[in-house]
Length: 517
Image 1: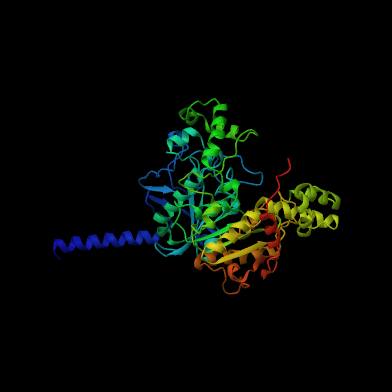
Image 2: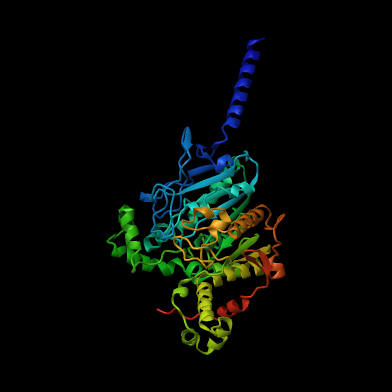
């Protein structure tokens, strides 16, 4: 054998050895930043790659700037634990699996089946957590990726900047940004979607089949990204669970309106310049931002991420024309349940708020006895809190979205748990059903109907991610809302039903009274 042949054989052997090594180590995946090594979960059926940086740490001089590219690394990065959660004051029912808070928090997590290979082209589900835009994290146990990937999808969950760190608008920031400021949390989501486009194929995902989905603020973000010119083409389907930006609060304020208020607040902290503010400790800024006299830090029309009110974008048909699955829970706001409202109190409330429209209001939210009045109070609170805006989003997409729309109503009342009384299908109640993570809710004793509904919802959600249609073998038929006008009730027995709430929302379209102080 000639020396040239020997070398050829050696090179071939080396190449085959590398190929064998790659096949033997499915927990190592190459990304644009470098190789990452994950871990098996769910008895080895799912691979988890945790704490992957999709942008540079937004600290120091990068605080309140658009996300910058993540640094590359040599060797193999450990990806077996969550990255830090973003700076926040969480809700009382939130728990986390990360090591703590930090400004260095722009991480995402990828969950994929054990059998998925490079370029398997599995549909991708991109989760945006809720929390009012000021709390939450991808490391919450209820968002765990142990189960959804078993349905044939790749799951991505992300962190994004929150509160004052994600949505501060000041006049100096506007000057620095050429007239634009704020929306850094939304820019983080868009940066993470770009990361998915460039890297998800290595985990078996299809960058041309991405579904964004979220709950509460995450759902509001989904509706916002559908309207953002910067996010167009980065996803192909959308799922919204209880929330939309078709409101003045989340989709109608301009940066010019908000910046003077935020500027005054910053000056009250003793920071005379943006440089001084960036030099302050994040804990100090966070504490000040949670005081009663602090502004609200939410998305704005900045001329870049959002160029006009979100509702206008949908009305003009300029949003993403993609399939939408959306809905809300039966009891979105249960605060009225503790008030013990009587018939007389409910009638007085109607007259005080709606004046000459009170009789029409009481037909839609009746109170013929104390029990009915209490039930109507819960309905009205939930509608004005989040259901009405979600309905407006669904209706707008039906009118101008030129794509299938599926609408649900989550109705199964939850059993009691550590943080919830039970007996209500409360706000956020659906999350554990969607992810199959019922057993992460502290103190809950689940029933067979809960397990059954969770299995069905995982199938509906993942079927929709695959094809834009939630239906599949063995599932009750879910008709299109834009064609049949039927709502799909998610209850002990999932089923299609007539829309019984339209009259309420058409009444509310005439105008909502100012909230009582």
